[in-house]
Image 1 (cartoon, rainbow over the protein chains, first blue to last red):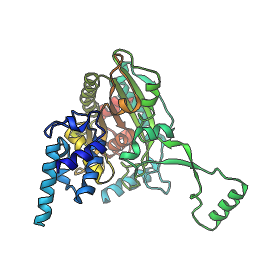
Image 2 (image 1 turned 90 degrees about the vertical axis):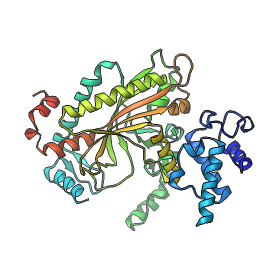
Image 3 (image 1 turned 45 degrees about the vertical axis):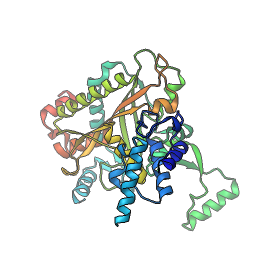
Image 4 (image 1 turned 60 degrees about the vertical axis):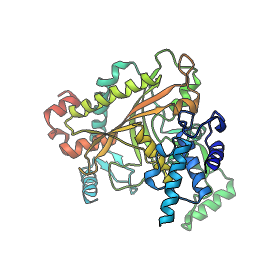
Length: 83
Length: 303
């Protein structure tokens, strides 16, 4: 999952640094992720994983690191399976 | 809703506002304007000695600047563009025929270089960036403009064309955050001076769509926007009459606005919704300004 997240982050994140240099736990906002880029990344993730981020996950925290995004996505896909 | 309609009806009946047939588009009487003028003078007693550079833009802005601002990313539903007839004589005949037959004559109107100003400070950032880096200590500006937002409503506090008075600060993060803090305190004092109940709360802009929900949450999480709320048509949903916004480096990086030492400038603004404040005054103190409490009259008119 993190490979795909990294790929989409590299495409939509508009980061001034290469995604390869970032660790999973690194703060993406500190790395230069803007609010608009995080929205574009969110939409790309939804498209890729065929999910919809619920309102409670549409916040800065969910997109603060690659690990946080993976965590949010697993939460959504888990909920989806339960439903 | 009833309460909203009734305040609007009372404003029409008293002649303070004049109906045009379009929700949110109203004429203003001399009395209404007198209140706005008096309140603007009161604002100046608080902010007039800060040395702000006064600039007045018309209520339309350069379309290229509007496009560059990113407004359409966030609020496409609120924007108003100016379109005009740019055709030949034959096109004119077709247009008149269309109108005569009650068909849509606007579909061939062409976009002009002008967009209606969505907030008083939007034309300011590219204008100041063009001057070059800010002087040491940054910049402070005093603006007022009619603004347009496409949100027709029976709520008199939600007009489509309304005036916004603003002070805008540009400089380092510390400079602009100090400015915002100063105005959050001044704003409450100012509104208390005219006998209105105030409440300040963290807020978000009406970003469009589901993606906008995320932008709104981000804005709240970072405490970027505060509003001073006053009950106007409802006590449960008070109206935002002043807003205190910290844009971080959004406009600075969008327009290449630099501080004296070459860093990207941060910006903040305090905005006064002038019609909303006037409506709050009328709603609380009555429709006849002669009957307003003496301290309120004294604060506004000195007697």
